[in-house]
Length: 183
Image (cartoon, rainbow, N blue to C red; front, side, top):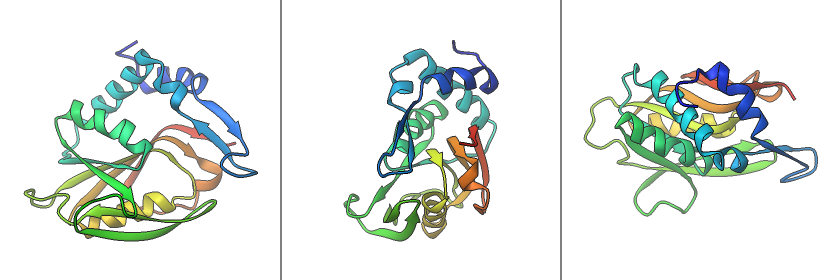
């Protein structure tokens, strides 16, 4: 299965993501990626396709948004031979942090990044990754944290883009998604 293009993977990825209606609250259609992750060949092929895309970029770090961004970001950083930086929910990082509050489609939350996340690299180029972009609040807050910590977010990568919610999202970085979903 490795060596497939993103287009070849799309149908297989869609078939391996479970939809859970009304989770975490009524009206939300939750995309459960655990069923994708259980499919080792498909997960490997996805990371390989992303590695092939981003090895051409000048990336110093991959930053993953808690928690599903860690699942894709860590193996991608490993494949690219780059550092991984976690962007976590409030109170989860043990050292000095920058914080950013943001709105979700079903509430609000706060994200944090270590102040020294990109220590030792001058003008670090950062790839931001998460499983899904919807209203863009989490992605926008993460991009702002990367900049506050001294990095430049060169692209924001998502497995899924909920286009009916993300159409008005304005990030400074380019946005790339493997799947564009309209429902």
